[in-house]
Length: 424
Ligand SMILES: Cc1cc2nc3c(=O)[nH]c(=O)nc-3n(C[C@H](O)[C@H](O)[C@H](O)COP(=O)(O)OP(=O)(O)OC[C@H]3O[C@@H](n4cnc5c(N)ncnc54)[C@H](O)[C@@H]3O)c2cc1C
Image (cartoon, rainbow, N blue to C red; front, side, top):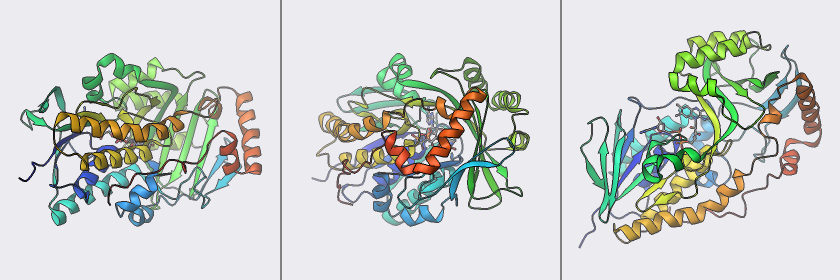
């Protein structure tokens, strides 16, 4: 007797959700192919965002998906990083290295371009491989109820009717609502560990003097301006950071996040006016930017990633600065791989597959959760004295090399963690 295809609901069309949809759609070991429904709260595809990078065991994942060359072709074109003073003069610089240990990765890509690429690949899988993927924008989960034979899901906006799924995946980012529905509101809030930093990203026109080097400027008060290249050579990515002296939330920024983009831009304008380097250019470009996005820099640490038929993937489970995108793609690979092996859609089989994915991934995530001491506060000093220490440190790092410095801070390799083989 032929088996019924698994029905899988994914909440969130970010990097984790789109990667998982693609991996489920194209997985060689699924028989029959699963039915995938992906709901995204935004009414249009979320294909914006500045530089993200792909590192460690996420590199074999993109190779297995056949995306390595496509991602390389979309490299931001960044060739290194320079720390600059208020007049723009660099006082320390690192160039991109082939060992993937510079701040710029060989797989540095705009989030918007990666998100678009993943969506395009899903469309190709639908057309050429008969994959069953249904993406619904402007929709989100209103409630979940798990029983022996599936998870009954009600949707908030009436674009989908109430229905049962064999598995539900929360890929809706750091502030995941689906996580609250699975583990409870208090546990969900408790899992967000503030780092005392907020970051705004947006695109600006490229101007004379812009290069393919990431320029990083810090000013007293814990503020930072970063200007990074785009491969199109007509625009640049600007990042504004605000960091306090402790790893604590900033109520005034939380309020701006709740109020929306105009309030966030107004906060940034007041904070960065006259800050030095290219603050006025940055603020003028911010006012005109239509892709402005701001978020808290936080770690998400959740004690459990799955409960019965429900699982967290990506930032909703383990948001770690510098590794968020890589871990999101690795998590998607493992969830797709373990689900491809289930013998039936019975609760026990699905729950065991989701637990196995966590057993495999947890050691890698735990390793990356350990932040370098004093991070990010030491890189965003509050005083001129602190900036002086940072400058001296950066000159020393130039001397010892970025790779060696990362090792001294305790950053090892991921070589001991092995990506399982699921028959790709
Ligand atoms: C618009 C945007 C721009 C970003 N820009 C950058 C950047 O420039 N640099 C950087 O390092 N990181 C950026 N990030 C974060 C980065 O993408 C993630 O940290 C990382 O890639 C892990 O991805 P994720 O899929 O887990 O989460 P995300 O990429 O945050 O994706 C989560 C998705 O879930 C959707 N969603 C949220 N709530 C619901 C809900 N209730 N129902 C349905 N869908 C929901 C969101 O709209 C989003 O599409 C950005 C995220 C977003 C959403």
